[in-house]
Amino acid sequence: MSLNSTLEIDIVKAATSKISSVDFDNLSFGNIFTDHMFICDFKEGAWQKPIIKPYEPFLIDPSAKVFHYGQAIFEGMKAYKDENDAVWLFRPEENFLRFNKSAVRMAMPEVPESVFIDGLKAILELEKEWVRKGLGNTLYIRPFMIAIGSGVIAQPSTQYRFMIILSPARAYYSGEVKVIIAEHYSRAANGGIGAAKAAGNYSAQFYPTKLANEKGYQQIIWTDDATHTKLEEAGTMNVFFRINDTLYTAPTSERILDGVTRKSLIELAGHLGMKVEVRSVLVDEIVAAAKDGSLKEIFGAGTAAVVSPIVAFCHQEHEYQLPKLDDSFALQLKDKLTKIQYKLAEDTFGWTVKI
Ligand SMILES: Cc1ncc(COP(=O)(O)O)c(C=O)c1O
Image 1 (cartoon, helix red, strand yellow):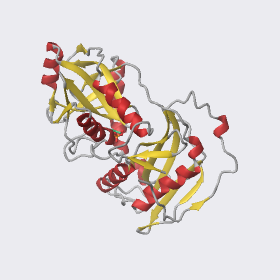
Image 2: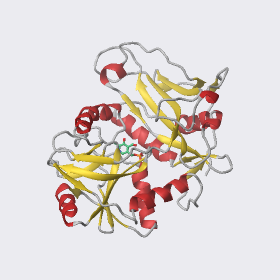
Image 3: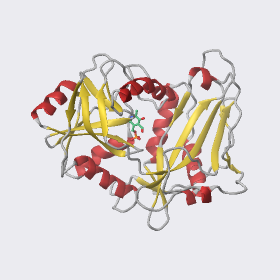
Image 4: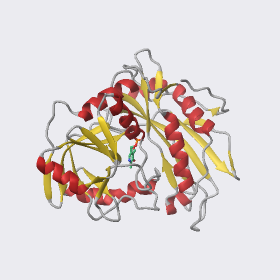
């Protein structure tokens, strides 16, 4: 599949590129941005002509709704370069659809497909030097939308800015991840915004995550807000559990983000002959499985790390260790998915899209 652009965009190129000053072997995640940014504003009920211009700060009125009411959504995706220098995206349509789902939930205007997808293509074409060859090198893509209309009255803005910024990244490795199961705090509730990629979901996690960090745990496994008995997400990732040789992950709901990695791993696992069950996973059954030795793996799944194995979890002040395995499902799935993304393995699913 490849993308055909029909979108008219004004392009103002940067006079010089900062690419030669970037140390691509020592990148910390999300701190360096490429030479250009894509901007498309919404005002008077319509999307305006987009522009790609040099990456730089911009002015917004201090009373803009994004500052006061957090009307802001985003996406996270990656571009990959294959052996022949072609640049690829992974299931971009999924990110586009999820972006607009988030927009609807946050009373923001939906972004036209041409603006999101063709905008992405246009800026990636301009910045393709920033996508480095080699497994583990990626260009992280951050599409986002903020409410820029002024006035502190608590109602939806009438003006919005959709942007795409790009940040070169190495494969994300978070070290040995230990998690704590949430017993009090929640990231989402029924009827809330948990299924949207809304900025407020992330800031709301910072404080409980800080408390978990102080206890020596890197992330929280979020449970359902009403009973804290169902295991739902791990930090900012979906979560999988392996008991004996079956993988379990919670069904998506109003409280869970419908992750692109999660849905891809479910398909891939089936393809690799692993048994997968999508159903509620209970805290009690995971604790019991840890005690009787049938709990083999827990791992997070998301765009940044692809798969993030968890080495231990804490529940009610008790820490349970996960075994080290030779036949880790997490690592087999990560290897297979990464190879598809970098075009090192055949993409029989039709997930990869050439720029
Ligand atoms: C809360 C949350 N859950 C799950 C995911 C995983 O989604 P994806 O696989 O689409 O990156 C993310 C984002 O990366 C997230 O922010």
